[in-house]
Image (cartoon, rainbow, N blue to C red; front, side):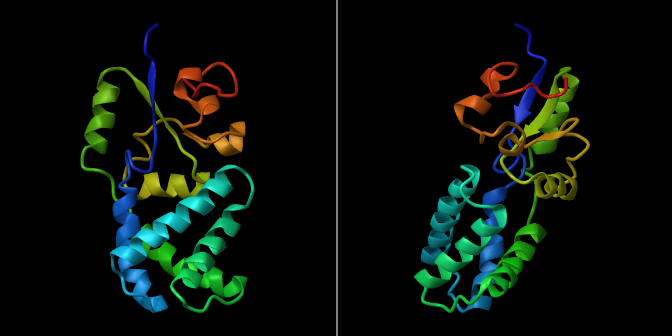
Length: 181
């Protein structure tokens, strides 16, 4: 079997997602009356993962997981929550900081270039919503280097990476379909 291409994750592989979240939280938490310290950062990540897991499983919408993250976090730190419109507004404050903090890992562009020089094609396999993931790649300067398209397995194949049906080892068989190379 000859390797023809490489599937790459975006968050935590090409984009430093954790640094972007931390930077966003350090800016956003004071705006909701919360000390931007270790316990609050850890709590946000716990709440975030719980609701992202529900979204990836298809139990809630993307917007619902955002609202639930904010609501559960604020309840846990004894801050007022409000209605959905207020939760959307509060999440937008966090999201602005997150988007402004998107940055690639320093080795991302050189790694993509090395793969290209080796004659390997690349594609991004991500759980995020396509619009946001494409914006991330554009902002960090990797949109044209990361491959011909972004694959969002949950939307296209009904599974989430890295579950077995979306495993790169299954590309071309089962529930997963190969990238366009």
